[in-house]
Length: 544
Ligand code: G1P
Ligand code: ZN
Image (cartoon, rainbow, N blue to C red; front, side):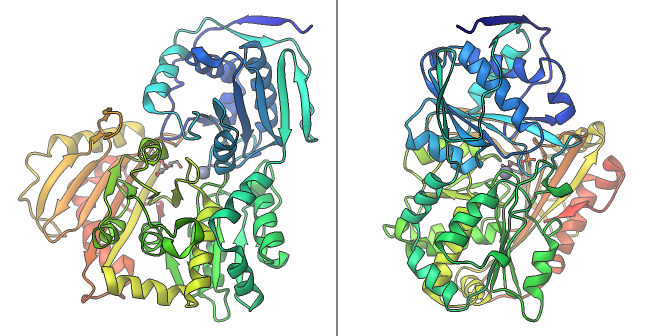
């Protein structure tokens, strides 16, 4: 009989979950009682947890193994009846969401800092997902934060570590521990949504597809789905061995960290499609031969073509996009008579809309795309959707994209990130801009006259909740838009994100370079917000 131990703690005051769970440096998570305090605060906010089942897994980053053992013992001491764990402690974020839904369980804990670097000097994170498989709403995360500030003790089990290396069911105190294969159920789900026969035939016919797992969690998923089930040669599945420090890389699938894919796709004899996913498998990068597809365009294109995939032949109920994501998908929705919902940044805001069945497809400009099949964004899903569309249409990515713009027009779009800037400067930039909202309309700028300016507030149409302060928006005459917001996922200083977009009609100039199309707006962003004054730099660190 294992005994429950009660451990007294001093509460912490910095455990406020951000855009996607609690994300801090590994060093901070490794501080005595830091993880335990957050987990106990979470469990305390789940009074109906007794006897319930949790799904548990993570992206395999450094500290994943230690944290899983801590959480297992605390779950047992806190009265959970069963925990379903991915073998080796591994579950991609979308696979965890699927397992929660497939097994109809109470919820899950996902250990991940997504695309942030890993290793002892990198980041770690923890996130709770509810019974719908989606990230907990702000009501829950706010309650957990409040609880963490006053916690006086946590409970755990006086037990050794659980061996997670083999599948099977074991016991930890009164709690069952079921170790499952992290890949199979997810791969089976993908086969129900996409035409694997058509995609495999396209690959056999010489279509060249290259995927980069970035040494993160999707490697085993990619080998099973792309390699085994679709016949992609293993030489085209790069970096598919997960490593705790992601091989020293930055598992963010963008043009900076996956530049070699971009170079390959732009080269004279490049693959037909290059793709990548991030640390925990929920983001996607899509680059066709000679044609990078921005995430906002990808969302719009999927909205226009999803019916070509078997799981979506009935069409979409509606679409959702986060506010900073470009309006490209709205134009498809308008043409198809679908409602387009605009939510704050962060996948958790799509959950209610997906649960209520008012949207089928949703996405964010930050390389997140997904559908009602799970309640997380899903990197491999987006890539499979593209493969399915390509297999049906039998045209190059570039031709499909150009055809899309000729039909709906083109939204030139970019995000400029000022990373790791001083918090004071970043907050001052936002505060000064906000204080000028009333006087900005009518003002001229490098990008023309400002028509309207506001701070985005979201009124959830399903549960009536209101989320204020979700970014500052400036709308220009002629349809261009600038958005300013502070990142909620960084762990060092502050990150200011500036989102730029301008629309060109189907009859307009559709083949400009994005930089050139947005240069006036970029200049306007700098002068209106006083970027160099507040941040001490005038060019962004990352442009995506
Ligand atoms: C970033 C992205 C956001 C995404 C989140 C989690 O959050 O911008 O779209 O949902 O990561 O992947 P941010 O750092 O901007 O708060
Ligand atoms: Zn991620």
